[in-house]
Length: 203
Image (cartoon, rainbow, N blue to C red):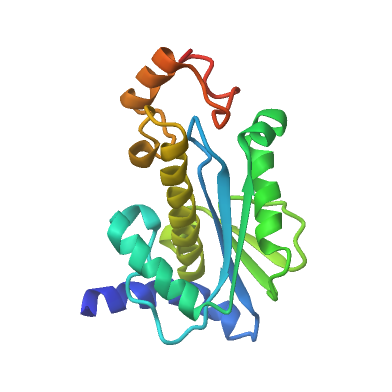
């Protein structure tokens, strides 16, 4: 646990200069910009600086079972959690970047924050200061927490969609373009949750 505490402290240290100014800091991240199917999902999270949640880190570095446990702890301790999402139809209409920005604005709509630390996205026009952080989910405690919330939320949704649309492997691939998924697309055709602007090479 000593290593995990050191890692959590490292992530928190990134944002402590802002917190020490008395600013309410929110972290924001998205999941699902690259898949062929499903929504893009965003999260905005405010956590207290103490006690640290030991397993908070970039969601991609955690196993699915670990993410689920950390998600539950975040949801218990968070001062604010907002979720935003945009559908495949909207993604097709306005493009994935603009859809992600809209979903981030939705997630942050009611957050009582002065400062938004955002993973690699800028220009949202939020009601506080925005700082875009490249690879922010590996640098900031709050962004990492948001990455976990967004990832678990979307993964759960994709498991539900797997039951509605069997044969594509959504529970396993989460809508990403794996061989299993693209073979199913060629064999079964697209579903209502596929992004038409993403799948042109696979049907």
